Amino acid sequence: MESRDKEPEMAGTVQSLLRGLSILEALSEFSVRGATLQDIADRTKLSPSTAHRLLATMVEAAYVTRGKSRNSYVLGHRIIAVAGSVQLRTAHLRVLVRPHLEAIAEESGEAAHLVALDGRNSVYIDQVEGPRMLRMSIRVGSTFPANTSASAKAILAFQNSDEALRLIFSNQQLKRYTRRTILDVDHFRSELRDTRERGYAIEREEIEDGISCIAAPILDRSGTALAAISVPGPTTRIMHPAPERLGAIIVAHTTKITSILTAARAPGLAR
Image (cartoon, rainbow, N blue to C red; front, top):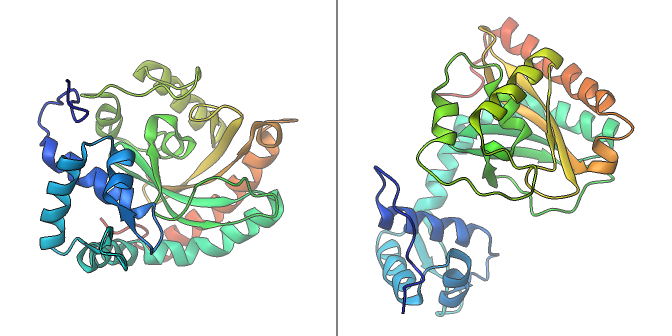
């Protein structure tokens, strides 16, 4: 019988490390009650024996600990400390952007998010719910593939280097989530050109059918994108009658944030 752990190898990767990270990501999705071994195995597609071996190592290193039930696992204090350092690194930008997220949520009726690019993924740094918020499993710390992300388009359209773009589209088999998922780098580059011309990015049902998103970049003094503000929602509300109105709302706020960062020589996202 073929092992359920069997995956295509990627050049330059350590498979056990990737599996361990997938366990940490799975644990972050469970509440304080924790996750059972079977929960983790099901979520990560690892065999229970492999998951158990990796969990034992992470428990010993305090990245994972036992939950209230001895049969469950939760994130340990060391991973919480690591996450706290990331929060500190983005604290200035979150404080600056928060009032604008609140205003966008009120003006648009949708949830507004502060998003950064982290390797091949976009990551939610902060969010404000809107009265018509789409009920999705989106929370601070959630990540999603950059090739499906309006935020990644907004950020990459205003960066001088192609390094991040090469990383996203190299050395892996990108997953097709919908018929509109972009898997070709040239297609993605054309989206970046359109984003630069209009000032905001559009994601049209590229990660989930019926869901679209608009995002605009926050720029530093050099005109390079630090992060983006995004507003996802049902395509019927985001794209109709036209995306220009929502795009203008977001751009008005990202322009103000950029002006503050530029005038104050504020650090934005620490690097």
